[in-house]
Length: 79
Image (cartoon, rainbow, N blue to C red; front, side, top):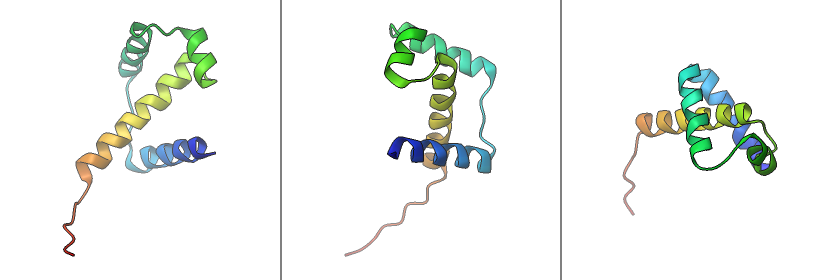
């Protein structure tokens, strides 16, 4: 349930802020996943997704996280 909400929020922020990734970035992500010893079958077993689907959401998570960190305005709160 929480994971679904996180993914929906990630997709929403990415769409709202125009965040995307290239096919080249996605292929690099897949190569990194495979370099860690995972293949299509193990990704499907652990995540319930195809390698392509997993790489897609992973790229969006990374892009959204970078966006938030770059655009965060931190305020110091005094006690």
